[in-house]
Every structure is written in C-alpha cells, then in structure tokens.
Image 1 (tube, rainbow, N blue to C red):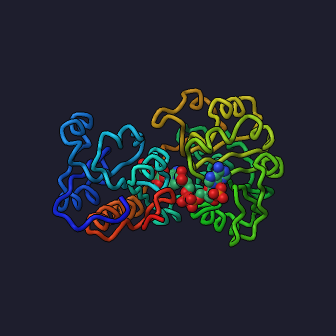
Image 2 (image 1 turned 90 degrees about the vertical axis):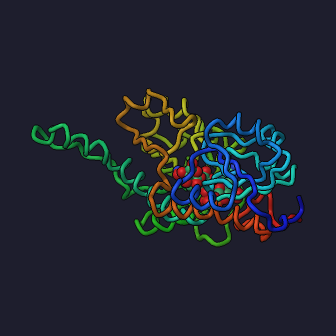
Image 3 (image 1 turned 60 degrees about the horizontal axis):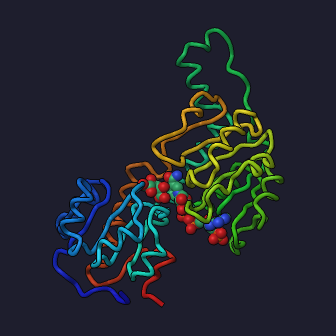
Length: 325
Ligand code: NAP
Ligand code: 8YV
C-alpha cells in the first residue's frame, strides 16, 4: 500500500481488546463493521478477507503471523504511545500503516512519574499503611530518604522524558540523561554510556520504549552501579528491567528502593515483590485518568477515520511514515 485508499463505506475493523467503550467503540460503531474483541480467533477465521483495519491495546501481540492472516489489512491503530506489542517492521514490510497515541499523554505520565518518585523516596504508601494500621498511636513513623541531595538520570529523553525533566528541574535537582543520540533541545549532560551514568547518579527514571532493543537494559551491573542509595523508577515497560535482578537488588539492598508502574508479564506481578517494604507497586496507571485515556481513545478513532476517508493517518509511527518514502 503506497497511498491512502479512496473513501469507502463501512470498512471492517477488528478490535483486539476492549478500548474505551464510550469514546472509541461508540464512535467506530457508526462508521465501521466492528468485529471482536470477543472470540477473536473465530472472528478472524470467519472474516479474515474483509478486515481492513485493526484497533489494538495492551498485551495481544500483533505480529507478522497475524498480519498474514489478514490479507486486506491496511492500518493498525494502537491505543498507547508505546507500541512494543505491534511488530511495526513486519507491518512496514507488508505496506500496513501503524499509528500510536503520542503527546496527548505526556503531562499525565510525567505527573505519575513524579508522584511515584516522591512516594518511593518518602515511603508514602508505607506511611499510609502505618496510619491505617493504628501504629501512629504507638510511635512515630521512621524517617525516610530525601530527594534533596539527589542527581537524577533519565533513561529516554523523548516527549515524556522532557515533561518529566521539566518537573524534576522545578524540584531543584540536577538532571543527566541517557539515550542513543543526544537531544539538541535540552541543557542536560548526555551520557552515551548507561553504565557510566548509573555510576554518576543515585536516581534513575526510565521512560523509553520496550521491545527487543531495550530488553533487560537495566541489569544487575547497572543496579550495582546505581548503588546502595539508589532509587529506580520505571514508568517505561517492564521488559526494560531484568526483573529477577531487580528483585535480588532490592532484597540484598544493593539499591535502596524502586517504584514500578510496569512489569514484564502484566497483570502478573512476581509475588516476591509483595513482601518487600522498599518497593512501591502500581498497576500500569501512567496515563490512567478519564481525561487522558479519552484523548488517547479519540486519537485511535481519528487515525482510523482519517485513513478510511482517504486522508492518511494522523500519527503514524516512525517505522511506517506517511506518505511512504
Ligand atoms: P519518544 O518520544 O519516542 O521517546 C523515547 C526516548 O527513548 C527517546 O529519547 C529515545 O532516544 C529513547 N530511546 C529509545 N530507544 C532507546 C535505547 N535503546 N536506549 C536508550 N534510549 C532509547 O517516546 P515517549 O512518547 O516519550 O514514550 C516513551 C515510552 O514510555 C513509551 O514507548 C512507553 O513504553 C512508555 N510509556 C509508559 C506509560 C505508562 O503508563 N507507564 C505511558 C506512556 C508511555 P534515542 O532514540 O536517541 O535513543
Ligand atoms: C497505556 C502506555 O495504558 O501509552 C502507553 O504506552 O503504556 C499507557 O498509556 C497502554 O498503552 C494501554 O494499554
């Protein structure tokens, strides 16, 4: 496919998961013949030759094998800025456009990252549990670590990384960052070498894509370099961290604490984390407000509607630029 299709009446669209029923499904229902998300396999088997669009979210892998089952597929619209569950290279090779939901969630995810950082450094969930348990009546809550003398290394300095940096600057903390390429529009020191940065800081905030290229980037060596004052905040993807290595580092106090919004096998969280007092665990809620999830859902709809109106995608991913080169 080298260009957008001519405008067409009611294309068939497959939903691989329940996506914001009130925003996405209601708007799409008037314009598309909708299939899924129930009985996906049976629906694909029965309608494979008709499916021209796919709206996807979360766990289900949209890989080359699935694409090969859908010979008329033109567009994959992903609910989320991270699209590590979609094989975008396989889509590109088949002339299929992939879209995601960038920018509309930057501030929300950055807010959550700072909330998680504060909660982890100042033991806020533990303090809440302390009060609820009636323990305050019998003594004071222990003093905590502080943000005051910290240097923050941000791994990933894209749209959300910059929004996080803006907030950390307002807290008066020095910032450095690691990415593969330096960013021209930020004043912070760039570390091309992650290990060197981990040695130079005591706080790491992860906000980069998941997938094969970043799998286990944060391993035992990086955690050891971060050291016993070290705080790790992960709002990126669970796969970016070697989870067993992190667990061991928390148990052995190789690092001080971690705040995790994301895990390798969501919604399954290794139970060994539950018994640790030096970790704050969130159920992947970086963008999870009514406001921002609605905006993300609207962008999923806008991409599909624009594509099938013959106007091209609104927010194609880098692997499937439009118009194609
Ligand atoms: P973005 O604008 O594309 O920025 C990604 C950043 O990561 C870039 O600075 C990029 O720089 C860096 N990066 C990519 N691959 C890297 C690698 N192998 N090593 C080091 N740095 C690498 O993306 P964004 O919109 O900020 O979103 C970032 C990610 O946040 C998403 O992909 C998603 O996984 C995650 N996220 C999580 C939540 C949540 O709910 N917890 C919500 C939204 C997003 P270089 O290309 O120069 O390396
Ligand atoms: C979403 C996210 O919750 O945008 C992302 O990359 O991780 C979150 O905003 C998720 O994609 C929805 O499943």
